[in-house]
Image (cartoon, rainbow, N blue to C red; front, side, top):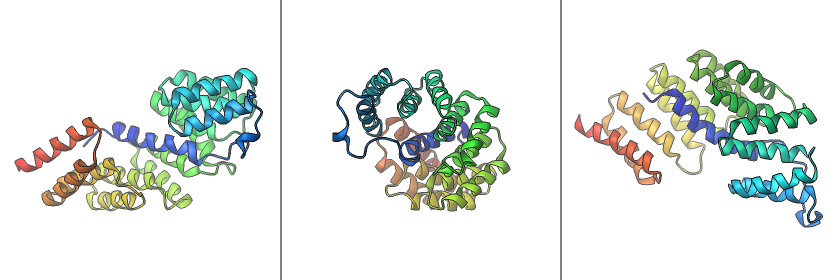
Length: 262
């Protein structure tokens, strides 16, 4: 089985994207053309646009301009924290997130982001403390994000029953959130409960508009463990046909090759 840490990082990427779309509404103008050119809010609006478009370097540039104009603009500081998460400059990300909390301790999005960083840094207690604040806050609109991250944290520390509890709490919050079912599949797979693992992975897949390569690979791997060679090949060949990343393609080819040896 693949290392759960590797799987959790793949899921973390999905959750990181959801931070941008699922967090509380930002306090920026709904009509950008009404913003005064050159103002802090003007640069903030541009920075968040670039951030949501995946233009990380441009987002960084605009958000830095925003805090030059207004150092206490918490939305810009939070945006910079997310920028540095993407760039894997985690110490910088922590610095900007802490600046947000110094200004506004109720800016709940930050606790989820800090939890993700501390997971990556291997700081269990700090990760759990921050994620629990987000997950249990009445002001956080997407607590399912934090429950996913709590479950990832517990999987990394081989606390599978605790991980499943957080997955179930997340599902109670949002039954349509695919990463929760994917994590549920990871837990069942680690417990060698392969039928339930396949069911959970398929449930995750059914909630997505486009087939996720990682989940297809997960399903193929579990079918292989179950001795369902043909089903495994069907799923892995589908994954190979959709894969773009060369590393993932090589991984899938290797799995198919191993199955064809049997």
